[in-house]
Length: 284
Length: 76
Image (cartoon, rainbow over all chains, first blue to last red; front, side, top):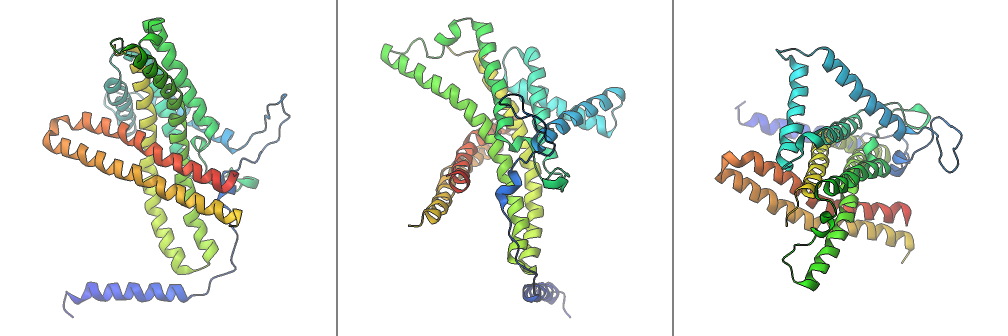
């Protein structure tokens, strides 16, 4: 057999195998609701404190896990600091340098030392939370394994964005005093236009809060929803061909989700740095 | 039209139409960034950082469409 025919034969073989897979009988069709994956059932019921329900659901557990992983990582790296970094230390140093030079260093002109701790905390918190969301952990309904991420919850991301929102205006007011609000519109603009620009800037400040939180939330939710749909297709169609193709594709989606998790943490941190830096060094 | 069908149709249209603009925008932006990097490789780090900021801002538009689609399906 010539070498040229071999890939052709292999392709035909794969096609035949896929057709056979398609003909294999599947089991009973099962119902699957993607939305149920994101419902927050209380896992541990606790009494309410006035209007605040204190029950522990999986979002709370994922937040604790994120904090726990971060604390454990920092303690571990702090104990084993060496002049000659090992693999682990080199990786953490790389992330630290990314936060210091890549995010704070490139996005802020001044006040870098003041705001680096906040920006780096946000970066590592969102990063660890996003990456934890890619592990199946037993915090689903009835403690079944499920996917979730604390950052796939709008309340969590709005809280994170509110920190940035408050710190932005705090930093601007502390640096520029009440001139901070005047500087929202360029001083050289003609009178009516100036008020208009000021109003537009006011709206954009509010929408920064919305976009910062919804971006992270929707990215994580969309990734998890796509993964859930890909897994669920096999249950719904009960067909081995669909299952084989979609499971293969879901591996690619999963790899893409790792990329998205890192990029979203980076974007959240760098936009926070840009907003805070922009409030301190205003253009006049 | 059946309200349930209209809901699902609206969600699909919102996501599909909402992805056109950001898709074109991301393509233009990333293409231009790569062009910039090819012309000035020594600026690659700065360009890449700014490109990611731009990606985040542009992509948010598509995600608003995604959120609207979700609201149409599950909340409305």
